[in-house]
Length: 88
Image 1 (cartoon, one colour):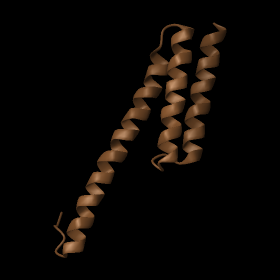
Image 2 (image 1 turned 90 degrees about the horizontal axis):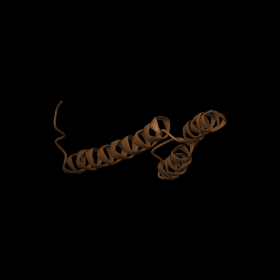
Image 3 (image 1 turned 180 degrees about the vertical axis):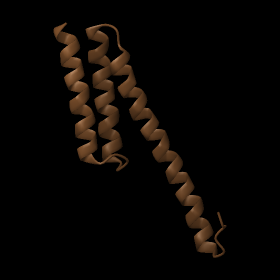
């Protein structure tokens, strides 16, 4: 891609890269937390992982990285999974 010519555009590109990297890191953190819930062996481990995942998802939503509806959907699906494993 072409590099920006204007000084302000160069600064904007630098800022965009920083924000994109930060957002990617948060999304990775959210996905890892969700994987921990799904891969937990015992129901106690699922409960602790679920609490941690919900906290991470809420923080990402508060920062604007996830839409609040997406965050709610993720939390709902993880809760359904946790309830299924608790009944077994």
